[in-house]
Length: 236
Ligand SMILES: [Zn+2]
Image (cartoon, rainbow, N blue to C red):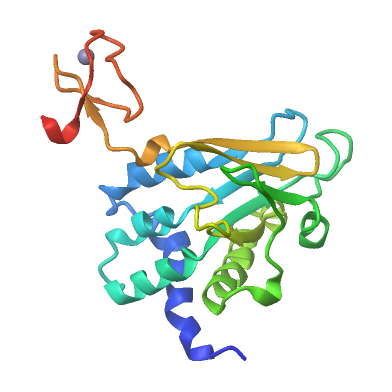
């Protein structure tokens, strides 16, 4: 049985993310980082004739998004992040057919997607989504709250957005996809494949050019302007 009262802070957090934090101007510090992370974790289909994409939502996303929100208690944020940290969360939109082949775009339903969505972890093991009945209250509340919000926020494509949860770790304890370690995460949707080279660049600490102290992308080794070896920001 689900405990109704427990869901309240989670729903507040999710509502805040979509109608507050992500859009609010006062999240100055975290906004660029959150935008970079969102961009890096969303991949579009290589097939240009369809509107299909996969969004991998790592736990860091919630931590960054909620970091500057003072109205939420630290305990609520931590409980929420810990609850989501038990899973690898993936959002899938998959268009049926191609652009122009039908008069109205339609998207695969949750039931159509579930058997064809697979995750291939950094060790090469393939996983199917965890059945809904086995998902925790926190995670299922997030999904149940986000789905109708996205539908109303972005229309038809929102109706095609479906969330799938995979385990956080393999049986040997290795994360399926660690944002800060080397590896490759793949999501298969039928014959389409989406992949992320890890670590995620948007989460790496920035580097500094020794010539003009300009901030550089964390995975760069040399300054593209001066050719000098970049230094870690903390060594400055
Ligand atoms: Zn430089």
